[in-house]
Length: 330
Ligand SMILES: NC(=O)c1ccc[n+]([C@@H]2O[C@H](COP(=O)([O-])OP(=O)(O)OC[C@H]3O[C@@H](n4cnc5c(N)ncnc54)[C@H](OP(=O)(O)O)[C@@H]3O)[C@@H](O)[C@H]2O)c1
Image (cartoon, rainbow, N blue to C red):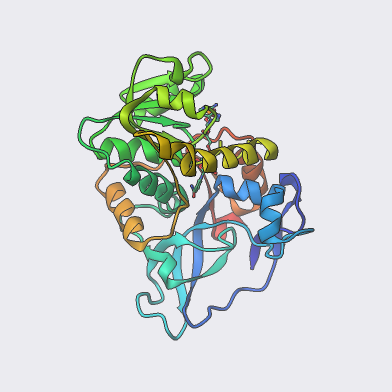
């Protein structure tokens, strides 16, 4: 089968379309005929081989050369212990090696695709949608609360704006000039162009800040939180952030959430996104109900995935970049 792989660390140019063995599902796994996959900032970090990642994924070169996490497709075969899926089921979820014609993943990482949601839309949801949903949940958002989303136009941000709106918040979206119309179109009540205005200098106070970028200090963000407000530290900037800057932001987030935050009534919360079937089903239901619309900047054929990864790596994706896989993509 055809699969996108990276056999060394480096720029997006190391990514290649290769012929590899079709995977065989283990007893607890589902073999999916992939119809669509989407990219995440994580894919760009892995390819570049940041030192923190190398400790986990291979010091000199990646141990696992597969790429992609978010998948949607049709079940082709199941392992003998799989009980929830059968061949022909349309599914979406998280699978290593999603950028390929076939991928295998444990059944706990998949849910059924809602019928009126396309494979491309479903593939755009998992990691970004779960990150937005699980992060915003920490904010315990109540009707009418003021929520600011910093980094509102990437994969995670576009879901966060819409989920916060669906929870009844008054949403302020922070983005660059070219994306002002985009964030308005997905429901933001107010917009701040970060190239012209620093949200931490405004007189406005927010009950919840969902921070996808984490490019402001603890004190700057405290200044614009309400006295019992919470700042959710979701990320460190997106695919384009340089390694040194990313490490600084990760360390800053840890220090802020575990240290500084314990001395104030305002809270700073850090988290790691977890696979949750229940949350994926909830996201599918929100999309099916029209409350959330996946924002897909562009779809690419599998053979054009390296070009998509170059675009992701530039750090200014507008929503999600989706790879379609199928007969037409060869
Ligand atoms: N906590 C977790 O477990 C977890 C899981 C998944 C992802 N994440 C993190 O979540 C973050 C977002 O991921 P993603 O996939 O959405 O990334 P992405 O698609 O690459 O989007 C990044 C966005 O950041 C915006 N941005 C860049 N500089 C900005 C600035 N100075 N101010 C405001 N916005 C700025 C860009 O918008 P413009 O084009 O308008 O500049 C872009 O839309 C990443 O840091 C990622 O590591 C965390």
